[in-house]
Length: 548
Image: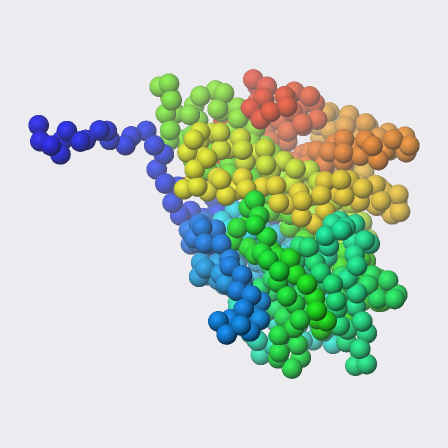
């Protein structure tokens, strides 16, 4: 035996092959059905084109963009303050691909066609499976459009730039760029979600502009071309558009103090900043800044739902792929009955989350046209953000467990998904904020209760468990003295009922009946993998698997 042969310890076997490139659109049955159901299938050519990118090049770029975090370059080598953030080329390529395919602007470029927001939601859903961090600037750019439309002069300059299907990272005045991105700055150290506690001040200038002095504790995407920020005037809290560069082309007085060292979202830069008399222009009425910027927040909250659903989908894809190839105790994992239960249970939650997110996207799409969809979007966004974003961390962790130790190693995408998973439940209002927002809507906008129950009633009679849940919800708001204390339970059950209604109307009995029996009927434990023995597990797994 040669020396070389003596050192041969083993051959690698019983390992799942790399998933490799795949088409994130054509292989996702539930997504394609949901897009058709909610009225966005006319955009299939665009969705199909991006599906190949999302499951291919974007997936590969996502690893490099997260392995090479952005770096703050506060000064140049001569000591001049520049406040720039340096990114790896993979980040720029991800942004370029996303913007070329309209992840940030498809809805606005096609808003005369019903279903445009549904199609754009599907684009964002596929993008976030591959690289979720860049979803932050893409989401805020998308969400800024309704706010900027309040000011025709600002809209004339900025909207053509932020709806362009290009990516232009150069530091130039907006008028000289081919495309721009928009960020946001609301929260401060002392207040967080309580923005009324802000102390940043805006001082009116003779030419109608403002100089802003203060700080922001979370200043999202400091590499953007402009930001919508909140600051006080004598009239109250206002909303302002603050560009990176002043009108004369000089750098605005926005000083980045540091980049946040975050749990996840590594490809994206978040920062703390100070404003030293930063130049800005008011957006919306004086003293109505919260109401103005909430138009942006409503859309970013929808993207939180979409983003969490996307993380769940990608975690499920990885878990099923592994289980289809790995053997244990003489069988493939996917053939082991207990693993089958886990995977089928995960598949149920993933589809229900995506289905509700796209139903809300249809409501956003229809809001300008009908009062019903406007009211439904108002309440369903808060309900969906609360529940779907809460589910993602436990979901991804369960998917990791399907891979065992391999799912805990950074060479896999699952650790990145797990780090990313808690973000959306924190960003744009934590769980308690969402629950209070639901109560506020029900109290101050009675039409939201009517449309909520109207939505459920469209599925009444389709499943006995759902019918009983509708009856319970009808009495859930009666005791107003304890309603705030009970609001998490009530909003959770509102979300599950909405998911059930969407699935019942979709007409796939294997999915809808199993969801209703387990999520509404009590035939389920507290952990994943507790479906009853008669659940159609093989059907659910096959529906969720990547179809090659």
